[in-house]
Image (tube, rainbow, N blue to C red; front, side, top):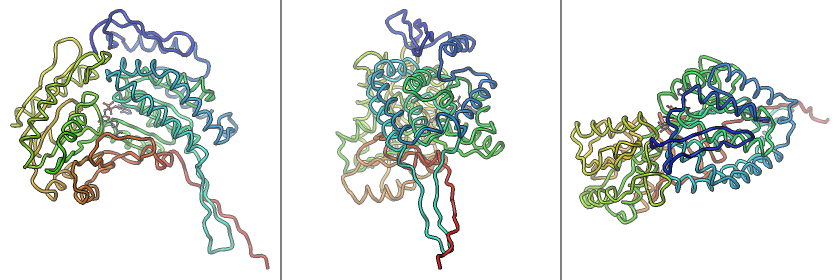
Length: 499
Ligand code: NAD
């Protein structure tokens, strides 16, 4: 974000309009909670179809009640067939494609993501909705052979009202992967975006309304975690919470579920993902992938390749090239074409990253480039490379969430597998090698929810995503994703033998 002026207001109808006062305008400085409430309330008055309310716990109460009404067995939503839900989702995807430029502008304004990246992601975002649309009428149960005189079948039914809690780093992609899947399953929901990024969820909710999703099915409440978020996770009428965010809050959410109504919980949490570069890797491919793996989106990515293990024979050459790559990376206004890194999301996150850099230096890692804030306007950081990092250093253990590459040396595959697994996290992992046996051995043994071989960061709505260990619970996307929004019901019917 820069400190230049920006005016933001939610106008009548279904559009959020952003007013610009200067050429560079990324940031919502000076928007107080009251401002946000007032503006959001203006939004409610003008919004006929979807409840969009504010931060108070009472608003969560209101939103959950709306979602509960919309889940009643006689509601318009519950009367829709599964294929009709699929058609609504396809319409939603059409509208996302129609408004792609507007939505990606909003996303970049909201969190500082490079515009080139947010624009590119729109295709995947619409694709995620279409994948969910296709899934809607493919949810079905089983028939199970019975040893008794009976007939047994299962039904897979929507779990009920869902609380969907989003992080700030990918607000739009998180919104669609949770909301579209929950809608395909037939659930109703209350969405709470991160306080840093309130905009795109409102815009997407407006598009859902325009697509024809009935009133009360999707409710957006912008608010803070300990108030709005906690009210949602403790609510006795919320049947399930799907959360993406930090490990710390993930634990609080699971406790809230246990302390309230034992709601179902899906958690997508942090990571400290190992990327392994073997001696036989093609460095022309591996160096850029490793750099993008930790610098893309300023390192604010849950699967960031934040522990880079490089085999000893190529270590010196790799480090040299990695430093060159980082030095050449262009940092600046995310709307300017050609820039490769934008700003960190806010001052707090920037200072947190700078704190980790200081710890890295103090604990003896070799800082080879970067390490500083750029200028005093906006929260821009230099792409940073540390070499000679060891496993016990803080920068090798904790999630930094910034553009900091930490390079560690290794000798053998056996050794690096143990070191890669020596973390409480288990979200993603990667390996660059031309030896298929090495790739398969590593993929089998590394403790991670996704393993990339000779690439990094490949995501598709068809592939399940989630973490081992402290990185999460459950899976999103793919066929497994929709199961998290369903309950299985078994029906057993006595069928006496005809004698
Ligand atoms: P965060 O945990 O601080 O906040 C996430 C959300 O939780 C926000 O909406 C926040 O308001 C809410 N929240 C905070 N306290 C709460 C409480 N007590 N009860 C209920 N809700 C509460 O995380 P963040 O800083 O927004 O996001 C960064 C983190 O998210 C990183 O750790 C990152 O790795 C992780 N992440 C994981 C994935 C994944 O899919 N595994 C994807 C993106 C981000």
